[in-house]
Image (cartoon, rainbow, N blue to C red):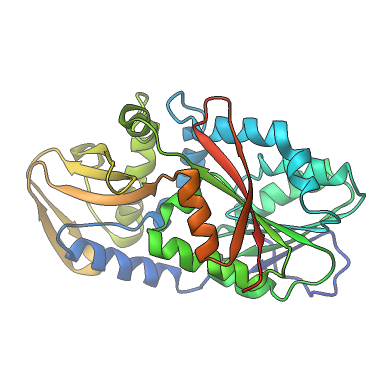
Length: 336
């Protein structure tokens, strides 16, 4: 893990580790709360431990998970057009940067217009940030990276105020769909609070479509998504002394058309009892009982326009993939 270096360092890579040192205590508290509720739930932010992050990268390659391929197609075809919408952009910020593979399309488009660029990735994993940042620096000798290992809100608080030329924020991969609708407005307003008028946000958002396609995207035939989801139970076993039988739960994805949301559950395949030693907790599951793991909201372009307006942005451009499954949306910071 990289140590934080002084701001005045001339190094091309600075990683600020703002991750909370009481992370395990927070994890324990949230697991206790979620499993004490009825219906039971766990929180999706804990899916992304190192193994979970690798499993999600694998999900992006399965046939049913079209989102990554669709977004990559959009960025490959339209990156130059996207960056032309933000003239003189000198700062690129990405929230939830992960491997930053798709980000390369935007970086390359910007560097075709200018020599130097400051990239500010924010990701919860310091190790993932270091790995992806060093790979980017090898590829782009005139790139400078100032990275923050933090959650979205802490990262946003750390990077403001911005200075220099216009900035472009990336929030890719339909991560906006992981927020409840009111929370999505709150989150986009937090981004808007960092930006100046005419700065912009490129927002990836999955579009509403038929039930079969959506449900398959979150429950692939190879079982990679199931491995990703049950990994949170394995994390509870490992870190909190649980005894979940990972094979005693099946994955269920259900598209709630009225809410425009894919709901993901683990379903107990039999009556069973689970003990989590460090929480001093024993819970029983009935056969067929479901535990909520995550939601993924889907949008129409009209939905996205309303979301932008409520958050202090104006939706100025939308790009779609060939099959009109996914959208990349340019939201420009407006006067408030």
